[in-house]
Length: 104
Image 1 (tube, rainbow, N blue to C red):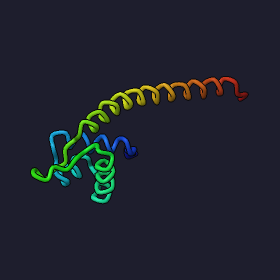
Image 2 (cartoon, one colour; image 1 turned 30 degrees about the vertical axis):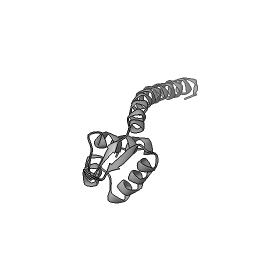
Image 3 (cartoon, rainbow, N blue to C red; image 1 turned 90 degrees about the vertical axis):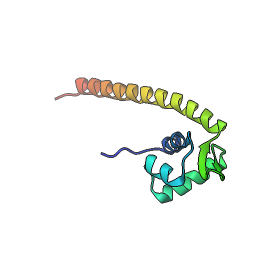
Image 4 (cartoon, rainbow, N blue to C red; image 1 turned 180 degrees about the horizontal axis):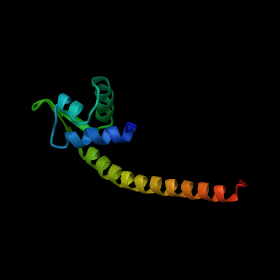
């Protein structure tokens, strides 16, 4: 089964690639995006002021707001993984209890 990335995951991947500065093709390949998705998300992160385009170097760089996003995303991601693991454990225990109650 393939891994499905959510919007926030894709944005974080783009920003992580652009931290030192990156050209469009570098972002596309390192963030593992099609050209269509790259264009869509790059427009979004620029509009949100998470990255800026440096015309002199002809590359995208993460802004201070983008760095703040990455810090918040890191905490969110860690907490989300923790919560999902516990939800799976709870569902497994519920199924076990339901099986114990069934006649058969």
